[in-house]
Image (cartoon, rainbow, N blue to C red; front, side, top):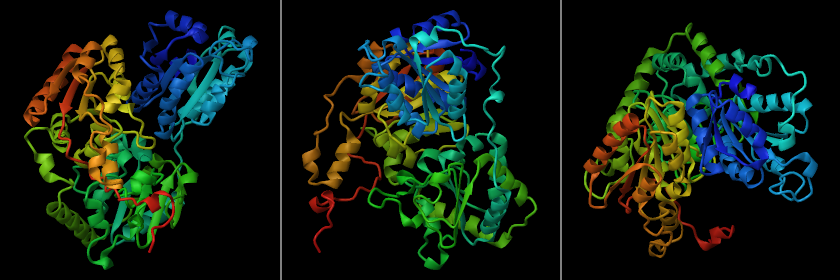
Length: 590
């Protein structure tokens, strides 16, 4: 408890149980300082802790019992690790004296090995086997979780150990004594990078989610913006980093990759091949599948490769040059790299003719081509509500706060149709893409920043997976908002299968969900809920959203808007069409 409080933890999420009685007792005694938020499922607790950590900027903590309590938390922990979220999962364990004896919910010497399960899913996992090794191991868990890039740790705490005294315990816990602040870069490599960028004809900067924390600083974002304006360098982001650079800025090409804007490709590869982009600087992206695949039929697209210099900067050396051939790799922290880049650039003078030409080109691209795949759908006003139009309405209503995006078609709709500028922030979990992430994470986000809106965009399938956490929100007076795309289907799957393996008719209604009344479900859990019916249009949704934003703040009550959407519309995933030969892994006949 002292360590957690020293790290600024005031909320812990989870479900209690017999293997953590001593921790539960101490939490009860210190409830005036640390709130144990009782959730409805351990996976939901981990999603809530993830959302809390993303918005708070600190540590999200999960506390569960042993056995199934621990394994239920695993999916959320694994997703937090993949998303580079600072999450610590503490799971109880049966007393050591009973290891191997078939004790209820044992997870050490039984067939279930909780420590090894987590060890294979997160960056650090340990068992506190003695009071004497507690400080060393617990400090390592915190050091790992709060390092850069952010990671997830797991600690298994046997019940008998939890009830003992730690020898030579410090008078006060001071985080600076066991974990350093990461702020390192390579000035010489930065100088070469700057030279390549400023001498390029068509340079481009590609921001990944690893740059998010660095650019969350208003001062650094302002300096970075001033620098790219001065040298006329356009900026695009990965899907996970959407909004890290303001998308309404004249030099923003918005997000590349999955369901991205049309603008990056027009800048990178114009009709005249002599004018291809020549230098790419990647900051904080591993360049994984969804970040680099402009459509599902063209994975890891080589169109990302410039004609001259491909520069990748990341703290994790294992991802540099992994998926694309680079000309320069820099192992460095993004914040320090940006600061050094800005300082070195102050002494340089841009080639103003080239700068003006690039700015004019980008303005011409934006004037000639909408960013959206379906401009008419985004502008629709009628019924049923088009999902692209839904994104437009959310954009018009929310200018600050936090948007949490779940898995499924809401990913494609939000990526292609939202325009995200600070202080509005966009949170998604595309490294793993679990259904239900945003359903829980939006609660954590609202708890971390109660004075600003926190809204989740989720599908009906994901909503039913973890919608019980609405009860957690209601109990704790959390005014989170859920907008549910209700099509009574797992539409990303069914629409994808229609394209992958036609005829399309065979997939119609194959994954239907039984038409549950989701508003009634939400009301029963303590939310105020409304349904926008199939024959009601965008204006009804707009009115419901405006009221929900007000009620969430005024009444501190969860709000749910269920929208019976247009089921014929589909996001621009660019699905290929498979043949049986391709499915079996053999090339089609000539």
